[in-house]
Length: 239
Image (cartoon, rainbow, N blue to C red; front, side, top):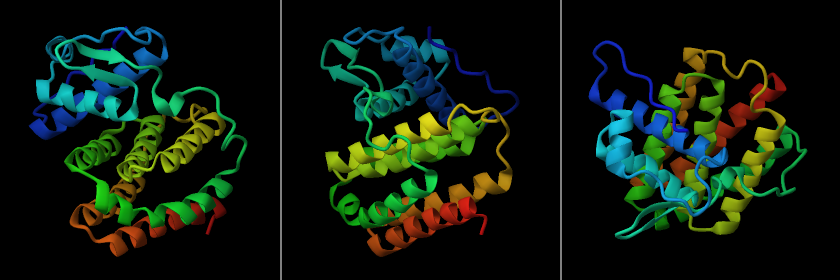
């Protein structure tokens, strides 16, 4: 069953509502596909139906579905609708690559790989990739608990990897996400509140990275990614 988005209280501005609706639709659709509520090959509700269910603009619905299309979870067939292609890629078939690794090991690999990707992103990314990155930043900005917050952080960097057009890099990062889910996500405390300074620091670092990529500043993007990952590694080591 699809879960309705929470109704905003007070005078929520249009951008905040759109971001919250997009996040709610994406999470609800992803959960429904993972739970088998929508079997592989089944047709999803139309954009109009989803718009009415969630009280969201059609464009917001379309953006949420666009993320699922890029993830390979659903596919669009012109004149027929949107169909489930399978489980969301980051929760796909068992793959031992990346399993049972420590966070330090994973961060070391990310530090070797991710600062090298800006050149490919700048060469190959289109507007849809940057729209997806902005959607992920909105997800981080509006995440209600640690679980959502971590999901959107990983989704942002997975979107950057997808923008390279290199499927092997994407597969490596998908394995990293599966490893982090298996080892850490869902632990007690994941429903806790995110400190404002932690969220602000993450947003500032990643907004600068996305801005540099959009502007074609590959060196700045590389430095930003390296600094961001080094700060995470330092916090793990208690530095």
